[in-house]
Length: 321
Image 1 (cartoon, rainbow, N blue to C red):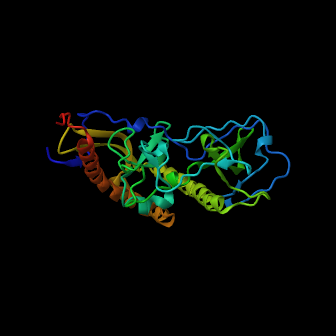
Image 2: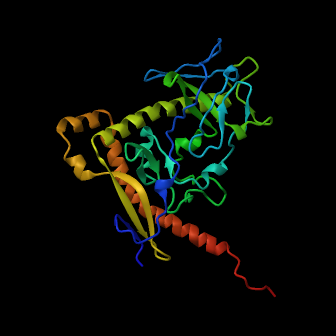
Image 3: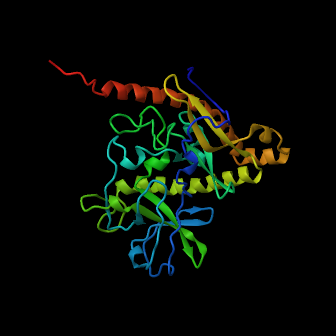
């Protein structure tokens, strides 16, 4: 068979279930029985009216329930006394070695589109959408992980991976979102032999400063991502599509549950709407998304290399004399 990919909608091959991947809202909502009390040292960054705080007295807040984001196991509010096991060197945290797909944010679209297919995945029966990078041609297949369990150094490393084991969470008070965010950390990364993030006076150490900057900037970028997705949904620009992949060897593959911008609908938009998309930087992201679909063909090439390597490492079964 000739190696190739296409957009055929006919269901002739197994469903790889990308549509059933756990979706992340990318900011995560804890439930508080009451709001924070008492004074605490905090850092504030204003982004669209939100304040991003670090609260060392967070453990005073009762009944804080936080749902972990996509790929995390259990997260807790970060305190200044926590010691955290930080990723070192090129070795990739286990959670990302089989993750497919992976969330991507607004600012990342141009650079990420060079290496990965960029699609949208729908939630709430198509009412909301989340942009994702496709990392493989099967469920739980990440073709960008090397034999040394590192991310391929020749491609862009997504911010969702770089921020681990930290994330931000929204705060709900009496059913309403408060104008603050709380820094959280993967619970299993908190260990006695971990890195100190703050000195004895409570001042941030270099290990935390860089990660805090990335965390806050990424959270701000998620607001732009959400606005972009709302605009695409509002103007009904997204359509579902199924991708057929035909490798040189083996059975045909199929990816379903993905959405893309419909170029015909885009071309039919009113001039004022197009102007709005241009002014907000959305149109550029749309074309980056569409051009990125050429990378599905590159995924086939990566899959072939992985298959070839696995076959070479497999014992032949012959006895040695």
